[in-house]
Image (cartoon, rainbow, N blue to C red; front, side):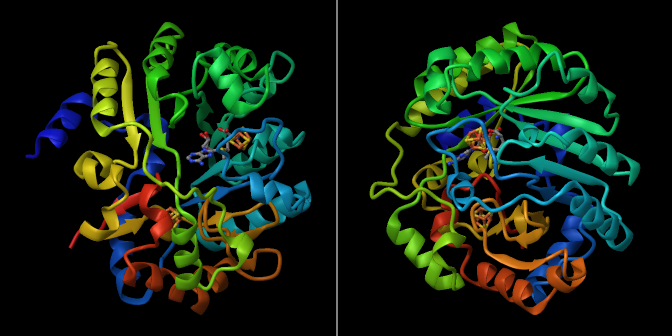
Amino acid sequence: MPKMRRILKKTCLYQPFKNTRNFFIGRQEIKNLKFLEKEGRVLSPRHVTFEPTTKCNLDCRMCYQKQERALGKEDLSLEKIKEIFKRLQAEQKINKVSLIGAEVFMRPDIFEIIDYLGDLGIKVYLQTNGTLINKQNINQLRHCKNITGLGFSLDGPKELHNQIRGQAYAFDKLMEALALTKNDFSLTVNSVIMEENIDRLAEVARLLKEEGISDYSLQFEMIATPKDAEHARAMLDLGESDLAIDCQENDAYSFKLSKLTEILEELKKIKGLNVLIQPTIFYRHPKLYFNGLLRQGVKLRCKDMLAPRINAQGEIIFCPFIKKTFGSLLEQDFEEIWNGREMREFRLKLLQNNLTPVCKRCCRLGERQE
Ligand SMILES: C[S@@+](CC[C@H](N)C(=O)[O-])C[C@H]1O[C@@H](n2cnc3c(N)ncnc32)[C@H](O)[C@@H]1O
Ligand code: SF4
Ligand code: SF4
């Protein structure tokens, strides 16, 4: 085993967190992979991601939802959301919905959405910046019995977090939310690994330990060059606004892989803290991943080929970063879109090309098993 991989294996814990099981591939998905490779078809997805809003109260430096927000499209009404999920549930038997915005708590009716999904027998996972959970609404959240987990974003100690997140109140409000929720929900805290915070991640980890939070998830900032974006657009016939990635000419990380492994060693010493890096393919091919060369050496797949994502207008889009729409659930049945010709051909094109150059740093990457 190469030295770097051995260090990483020792450093990071492999066991998945309870509330992020949806990131890992299950038996149904393995069966699905066979159809996917052959025809681009994906059967009976049980897990759906829904973006209930494009609105957000923060302005994070790296946010991939910025462009979408700038388009200023109107979010679906509560009634339309109910209509979509009622029909979807009748068609597909969904058992879990991940609610990931922009910021889901910007919707005053978010608790009604969660409750309605609960009435349909659907469990919910929420990802949030935590700033809008407070003493006034915590009881409404506690009342929602179908929540399986909450994911919070924390990118640094107070000043750095506030600087990255663009609001001076972001850190204190998040800490308040963690204190209000940690005894009643299964929590994961997520940091994006980036130039600004690489040296401060151990401080974040120690802070989590002090707060009694044990699941710490790390993902790399998506970085792609304008050339990568151009290549992906041409490959997949994407429009200008279909790609939500901030591009920069130099796509190398400003820190070394050895620096990151040192930091991971430090995190390992914090007893009782489970650290997980997304994507887990990083553990298998750290150098290729880090240098953005995975596509050249490894046969790749992507989790979003198997799990639908619905945007705030009720359209099926491909993934968090490729926002191309394939049809509206207000106008068409799910199956008609999900296994329609356009979506099947899109998946096949992605597989044939071993994904796109913008996919090289994505947290949703996986390895294709032969
Ligand atoms: C877009 S946010 C939506 C949920 C919520 N507003 C939040 O910040 O947690 C989802 C996750 O993506 C992360 N994220 C945002 N921009 C990113 C980027 N360019 N690369 C990698 N992760 C990013 C955020 O830090 C957050 O953990
Ligand atoms: S809080 Fe989340 S959605 Fe809002 S700007 Fe930050 S990363 Fe984007
Ligand atoms: S790997 Fe590529 S296609 Fe898959 S979620 Fe990431 S950006 Fe989208």
